[in-house]
Image 1 (cartoon, helix red, strand yellow):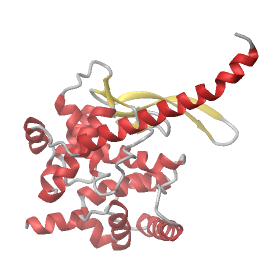
Image 2 (cartoon, rainbow, N blue to C red):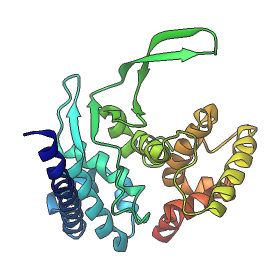
Image 3 (spheres, one colour):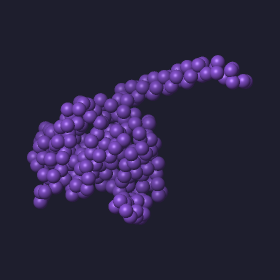
Image 4 (cartoon, rainbow, N blue to C red):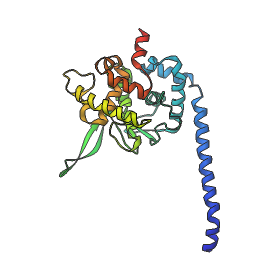
Length: 278
């Protein structure tokens, strides 16, 4: 086939490609809609009720939406065991339910951690390669980690930390909430403690509150946030998210402005869940 014939076929090839892309997109949206409206199977709900105390706090009227998000997450994200870790329904559901909790009312039916394809799970803390630089000297080494989130790649977690975090729903430490808060932060291509917001006014308010609360809380002798929050802006958001869901009342009392802006972002009020149960 000569160049002229290829040139004449080019429009048909382009149109076919576009139609195929549209078909795939429509198929994806249709499948998501079906999954979002499919009840979670009873044995999965039993696992969540037994292994994820945070799940038991969620109001009954919100659980069907969470179940739909879990269905989509399990269908679209791949779990891979590392270091001999077996991927069971307990591993998948404990992780997925807490990751989806962050999306519960964000109205992101088409943005369910869009950059994330794979969750790697180790049985225990794992050793990761790290490179640090002070601007002049580059040092390559290794560090022991319980979890990490890559901007354009996977989430890596240690199962014993996931399990401990899920069971200790009041201690403010939750590796799944922490790493998936990083995923939300990284959706705009930057890990800077500023997730995707709806408008310029929200960005201005977010930056103002987070900057002032970072400085104020860092200076406190006893802070509701773990000291790791003050490593940088990205860690401040991740640790604040852990406290928002796990130490809700304490965060609301000690940092009401921070709690309020997280309430506006996540569109849930975990402190009210606890108060209503008492």
